[in-house]
Picture 1 (tube, rainbow, N blue to C red):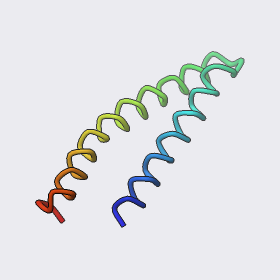
Picture 2 (picture 1 turned 120 degrees about the horizontal axis):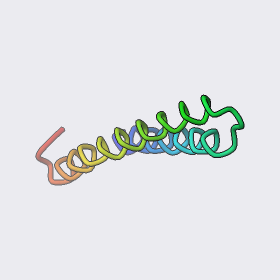
Picture 3 (picture 1 turned 90 degrees about the vertical axis):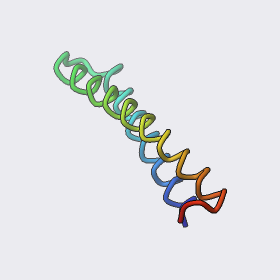
Length: 67
């Protein structure tokens, strides 16, 4: 069950960062590019930062110390 949740989370972060990256690169409007760049920084910062917490939770789960 936990692996399914992690896979869904990883796909969500990947999809959202890919979409924001494409908008930040290919949009003609400077305001939209700036907003997409902010979203990209937010997603990558929180997504990968929370990934460390998730990795620790996985290791604790594998060691039968959590869950």
